[in-house]
Amino acid sequence: MNYAARVERVEPSATLAVSNLAKELEAEGEDVVDLSVGEPDFDTPEHIKAAANEAMQAGETGYAPSNGIPALREAIAEKLQGDGMAYESDNIIVTPGAKQALFEAFQTLVDDGDEVVLLDPAWVSYEAQAKIAGADLTRIDLGPYDFQLEPALDDLAEAVSDETEMLVVNSPSNPTGAVYSRAAMEGVRDLAVEHDVTVIADEIYQHINYGREHVSLSTLDGMYERTVTINGFSKAYAMTGWRLGYLAAPEGLIDQAGKIQSHSVSSAVNFVQHAGVAALEETDDEIDEMVDAFENRRDLLLELFDEHDVDVPHPDGAFYMMVPVDDDDQEWATNALRDAKVATVPGSAFGTPGYVRISYAASAERLEEAVERLTDAGYL
Ligand code: PMP
Ligand code: GLU
Image (cartoon, rainbow, N blue to C red):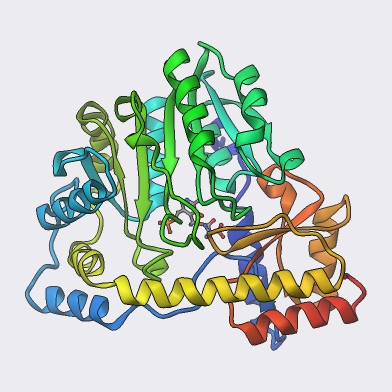
């Protein structure tokens, strides 16, 4: 068969590839500490499961309206309005996972040869989705700035021009855990307005934030009309397997992206959307508990790395940190999995070699075990 150029120019997801490898080793009887994939180790809260069961029993098992059931679109609009955003339910498309929301945004906005700017290290699927859409990538390295955006604004200003179609901003960030300051976001706004750039604001880690201000780009003057806000239920609500996310944008984009949704996935799963309504309405306490646990684990890991004189750029959110390792991070990660049975994702998968990403959505015991194994095997 002849494969299309658009698939041949991308690699499989590195995060999922390492996690698959770790699962294979486990199936062979190995005890792997899997710090690769970004997935909460908590189960979905009971009231969300109950709402899905109830909806299923009530017969909500057929096709749903393509852009989402009205109750969920309204609940999402209300949530976003509570966060200071101007979206109504007509501005929402409910998708099977935030990944699909991003995919629809890239497909809707990016033509062959359009310039898309990423802030490195950037989550693996931005690069792949941009390339599938035909983009030419420009990458800004936040590495020299401890992964913060504010000190990198001059670099960004040099890169962004009238030729730039799109900029992707993800705060709190996967894979660094950085939370970008208001001044950084205002700097992005100034450039986006000056050069008429569309910004994807991926806010999927919004709630996993240990006390820094979360700034939603679409709330800034001049940004509503040029922002696509992405969010979802996987992380804060521990619902990775349910596949539920959304995009929010001006209606013109909804009309266009809605075509892709209706011709591809049709809709997110009907009864899962009903569970999404319950998730948005009643999960504050569980989110607080999970976020407290993530923060304690972040503190524990930073302390353990500090004891080994490993200087980790301080993460303020999400459940990731980038740990400096050898220049050849791919080899480091492969060998650490082989020798210490600890799974991490090489930084080069995110555009930043010399680091590995650790997802600390694992119990304190497993995190301690990981550091101990890496120390014993000579990796720390
Ligand atoms: N954005 C970021 C930054 C992510 O880390 C993820 C993780 N999968 C997603 C989007 C997509 O999440 P999901 O498709 O599970 O909603
Ligand atoms: N986003 C998570 C991660 O980066 C889940 C896997 C994926 O979708 O890439 O590990």
